[in-house]
Amino acid sequence: MESAIISIHGRVQGVGFRWTTAHLANRMHIVGWVKNEIDGSVTVRAQADETSFNAFIEALKHSPTPYAKVSHLTVTPKNVEDFKKFTITD
Image (cartoon, rainbow, N blue to C red; front, side):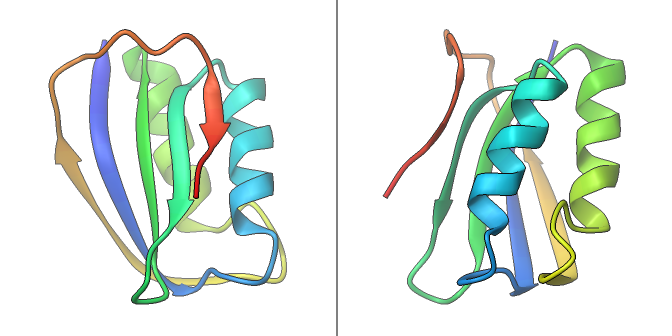
């Protein structure tokens, strides 16, 4: 099981990024959450099996919505938690 915090920078707020990320995560069986940050970035807490997790990261690099533009993202490994689903948080 892979688990991490993903920080995404670029034009990622006000363009449906959280909603499309949640939709993608649910399709890919990713659990965790996504939220906007005050600095204009988006943070994702994600965990899944290695194959799904890596595919999810690649999809985020290229943006799950055509209206966003990801300039860069960082992945910080974290301990596995007991998430049941993927949610959008404030």
